[in-house]
Amino acid sequence: MASTSVREHEALELAVFKAKGQGVRYSIVSRCKEHLSIDSMSGVLSAKNTLDHEDFSECPVFVIATKFLDNKPLSTITKILIKIVDINDNSPIFDQQLYHFNITENSGPTRIGDVHASDADSGDNAKLYYEIVGGDKNHEFMITENGEIETIRDLDRETQAEYHLIVEAIDGGKPRRR
Ligand SMILES: [Ca+2]
Ligand SMILES: [Ca+2]
Ligand SMILES: [Ca+2]
Picture 1 (cartoon, rainbow, N blue to C red):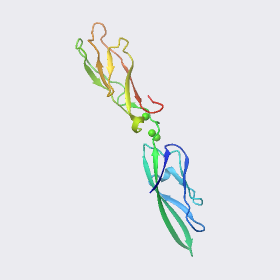
Picture 2 (cartoon, rainbow, N blue to C red; picture 1 turned 60 degrees about the horizontal axis):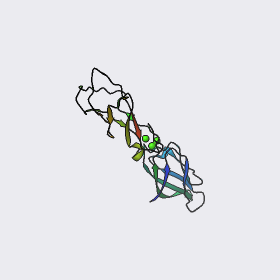
Picture 3 (spheres, rainbow, N blue to C red; picture 1 turned 60 degrees about the vertical axis):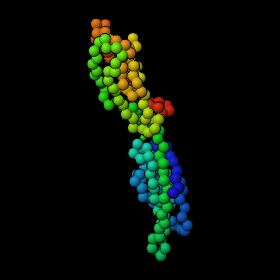
Picture 4 (cartoon, protein in one colour; picture 1 turned 135 degrees about the vertical axis):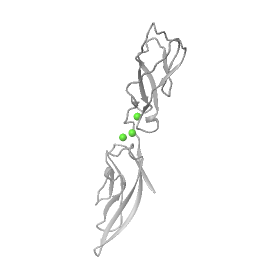
């Protein structure tokens, strides 16, 4: 099957279909039909900017060419596969806005809890990294690539009883989104 690719959300001419004969009209059948258009006269197939990789990563399209001979329709069908290339158009979103964790003082390096974000894109555009960007001025905490927050050393309740850490999730796209 012929195939072509297009970046999501980009209006673009994809292909031109030409069937033999006079007065041929073109139409398409596809599950992403509303995000495509075909010029019934010229056979030019285009993507609309609504084509969304997060809905369809690829999309088979049947192109039907029809002409009339003695008032009888004659049709021929050809197929093209449209691959929709992901762009980094979604930022990571945390499952919760606020996480609460408790920890006992003087417990040494300890895992205190997990945070988790998700990203609607694919591949590197959805690969997430976590960073503590605030609330840790004495560098007492770290976060792993899986979002596990750990203490690096003993915490002392009498010195500080509560921490408000700010964690950011960053994806691996270009440019990266947070
Ligand atoms: Ca999208
Ligand atoms: Ca992303
Ligand atoms: Ca995307």
